[in-house]
Amino acid sequence: HRHEPPHSITNCSMDVIHTAQYLNLVGDDSPVGIVGHSFGGRTALSYHHLTLTSSQSKGSAVVLPPEQCWILDSCPGHAHSSVAGVIDAVSSIPMPVATKKDLVDMLLKQKISKAIAMWMTTNLQPIPSSGSGGACTSSNGNGNGFEFMFDLNVAKGILKDFPEQDMIQQVRDCVMNTNNTNTRDASFSSKHNKKRTIHKVIAGKNGSWTDDILNELQDIQKEGLKRDNEDEDDHGYKLNILTLDAGHWVHIDALDSLLAAMTKEFQ
Image (cartoon, rainbow, N blue to C red):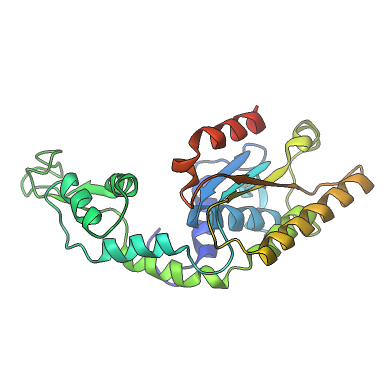
């Protein structure tokens, strides 16, 4: 990604498609599943929607829709407050930092949980020392320190795009699949059709999930089941709504339950 504006979820999902094309993961070798949490879940849904409804490019370079799409606690509307809080906290820290521990300590002072602070260190990269031929003299911070490998201004721009994504309509389009321009070959589709599912994982402790949003998702789920029962040649997706006893960071709070559900579906 060259960081040209506009910084949007659609452009991020196109980056994923272009990466798959570059790796020659196209046609019937296209990825069979995509998983994303929070912003990643929004991008996964947008990717899924684009692979279903967009012509992308001609011939064998087309990335076909995944059989499974896992959207982990990505709630329509604005970004979850904890996500915005992390971005604000990270933006306040002067770069570079001498060690990864320094970043953790500074984030803890900003009231960020230790688990998330530790995770943020995975987004650091060492700054090469002059004359080292591009290599950092030390991995523990005794060289020139560390900086973030992502562009904070891009991250902020994407957060502003959150309310512009009509997630409910995108889920409905994928489930009903009435505009599908891209399909896998018949043998692949028949083999995997029962697994064709969008999994909407909801953190039960995340208050952003209002009754209105949940009712809309349940209505789409019912529409999909009705269509599935009426059409034997249906090419749509089932909608699985899975609620876990967790906060927004479901892959931390309920990792075992999440892995058990995913393992069952991918078998």
